[in-house]
Length: 151
Image 1 (spheres, rainbow, N blue to C red):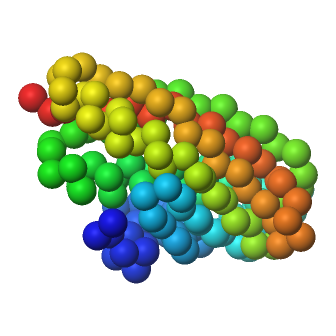
Image 2 (tube, rainbow, N blue to C red):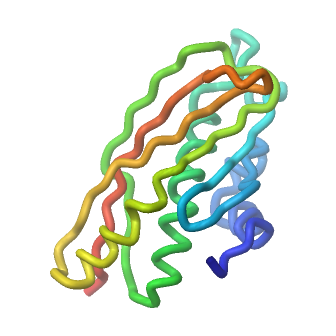
Image 3 (cartoon, rainbow, N blue to C red):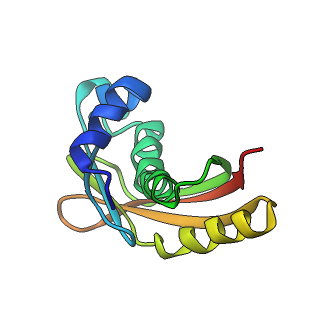
């Protein structure tokens, strides 16, 4: 993939400033997997002194969406992308550094190829799992992404 993590983090500063200011950073990305981290701080916490659920959501969504953006760019086609649906499960208080990993990058190319071939929108689900520094799962997010060739 031609998109570097540094360029992507610069992109978040200009296009997703709330995520950037909350500390959401892309750490690794290839065509199959993306890793995003965010650290619990006073400005991204809830009243219970853990990371606000929406901050976790931003990091989780970026771990899925970064691969979608990169693969759309790689296709060379004009394709729109949108989250159509999502759900989440919170299993432990999120404190410290949380690492969100998505390993569903393999699903994107098939959807892009189908939308290019048919002209119809395609939908697919991607999962991102957030773990704390001890390796304990704190939250799991699922995002239904849609892609469609722009007219």
